[in-house]
Length: 306
Image (cartoon, rainbow, N blue to C red; front, side, top):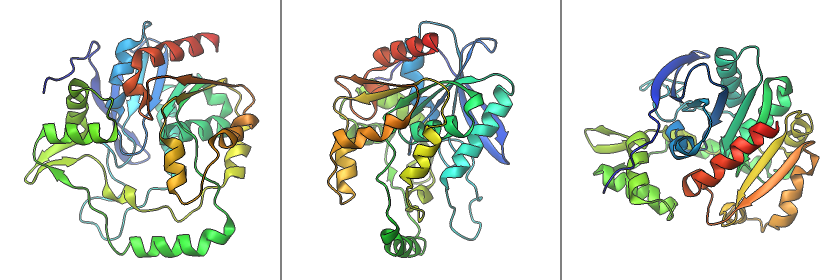
């Protein structure tokens, strides 16, 4: 397979965020306006390369690998006893530390995809003075978790932490690329190969994915929609929600065991004060891979309006 050749070269750097060595993809001049882009679950900061290449204006783009993903450290070192845990509030605190490092006094433009979109939305409501604008890519949140489900949820979690999760290894970089294309059939060979080199590393068994398998352990704490909406109501910045027309999100939510009326589901965002939504055609959940040029234009237009 050929490999995608980026138009804008990234810098790979590390900063200490709350005691964890955190890897960052950075693009653009350091004195340019700051644009922070945070990735989703089982992804890496390099995922935004195609969007960065399509940006018309100069930005200092900073895209971290969340804790336990990519080249960022895991909360507990290899070989230490116990199962690593990843709690949603830690992502908020990591983002807070990131902004303290890069923009301690000025509000920033924030883009987040999927899990990163959910983090961006929550953070923008918790720290409204820190955020200038938000672009939420396919960050829908999850189904509200009723109290009656708590016993089963905690029981399932207790079972899962007794049997550590594993991520499979692959025989070649091409095999990793094909794995990415299995998740997103729209991803070209060239882009899949480009992402595969940041999504995996070579070890004695082949190519292993750059992610902690502990991320696959279910969260014992249910999703509280009322709490999320209380934060969303507090967002001062304008929010652009980008949804892919061919999104798989409704299907994933239905697989959770509850049929979802996705039109009704979207009304949860009616509480956001400055809310705008747009649907991008010919794109699935990985909209930043499928339509990077369209997305770059939407991001820049939203920043300019803010």
